[in-house]
Length: 438
Image 1 (cartoon, rainbow, N blue to C red):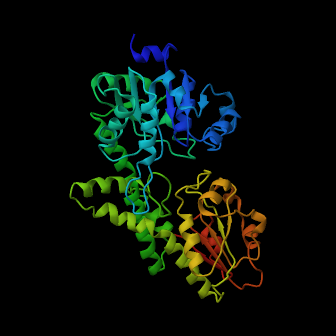
Image 2: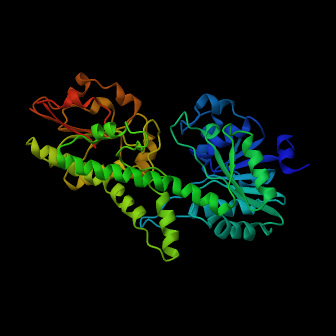
Image 3: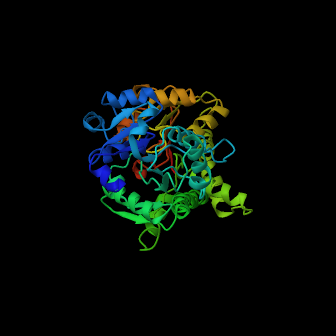
């Protein structure tokens, strides 16, 4: 009986190392079919899961309450599993070099609890070569086992889109890879248990790693192009969204939109690729130029706000400005790597301390990471300017009367920055508003 049959038959377990926005939904999905150990070092998070609370809001409290996942912060429980999936974040350092600390740490813990006959699959986004050249030596050192003899490895890049209820683990084609044909077959069959859209068998682990890192690099470059167009069209007095809607009538026009590019993938993955390229003597031109544009968008938005205040003769220093939305994307509580913080910091350079409101965000996380305390919507009144920074569903409910109520009634013109174009532009291109959007 092979490993797949043992897992399906309940004789062996699958473990998920890292229970964040990516790992937890994977663990929950597999637990509907097989026995799953869900491991995370964060004991507070584990306790929340045990209490039936989903802090990520990816699957919801009801699902967490009824899942069969065995949530644990005890590394020793990993010894009970034979198929391991590692889904920890891979951020970048302040100098934009890859920070492999989480994946190295996960490899260390897993290695210390690895048993013979195991298969280890990494899902974390990395540059080609990390799985075999960095993770495997750690696994071997910590376990005393030999890769290819005592245990096997694979790579299957995560494609979960946080906050997206349509494109889920089950509905997205899953790339799988393995160190040899036998491992590839095992990895593919295991993932086929939960991925309804099917799997794509990459020809090697490095190919799978490269495929993941270019997916988000491609999106990053396209969004950077839209952001650059937005800056050009502003100088021309043309509405970017109107231009894109017109251009989008052509069948092969790619429908990207300008915006802030944060999060753990699009704003990070390109740096993994360019780092490896530079190691090999190639300095990226297109990828890094796109990154520079996207990294500067928070500053561009803040400067546009300041210019707008000056246009309507409102003093900039100590201006009352509300920022609505702080997460890295809409309808998601995650504030890590949000680019809204760049707007906040840049406004601070002008003597503005914004009132930040985000009903969807993890307030505790934002205070811990950025030292920012969120306010309620009731605090948004008598403002000199308002920035709608994130397209949360709650903000879609705003009508003209509600928006009017945000401002100081003494102002002849109200400054409104609608970064994502949530509102109907024609409703606010009036004498009493200075309306701006990317």
